[in-house]
Image 1 (cartoon, rainbow, N blue to C red):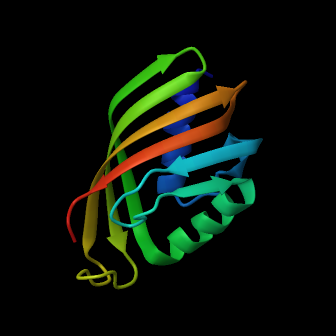
Image 2 (cartoon, rainbow, N blue to C red; image 1 turned 180 degrees about the vertical axis):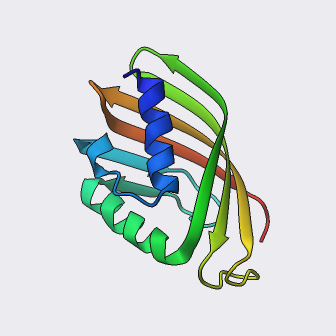
Amino acid sequence: MSRAQIVRAYLKAIEQRKDVSAFYAPDVVQEEFPNLLSPTGARREFADLKDAAKRGRKVMRSESYEIVTLIEAGDVVACEIRWRGVLGVSLRSLRPGEEMHAHFAAFFEFEGEKIRRQRNYDCFAPF
């Protein structure tokens, strides 16, 4: 399976609310750069990613990831993604059942067939 196919399968698994820990290398690091939801950004390792996924499933009823652009170069896959999420809880001005929208740029670095590092640049529509 190509790394591009792995990224597509990973995003599909998130949409389907599946456990995605099998996609990660044991020493995975995910960086989220500052955005509306995380003004100071975040750095997550394997255990943190599992906890964040559990919290996310409580906050969001559903999510969708539309890949606009995907480029694979060696051990790196770069994606431009349109994200939509339906809230399961109130968040600022939004109520449960309302949608959030964002444009993401995500860069995945691989070790073999596992994601070793992920960097997200998330641009949320105002809410």
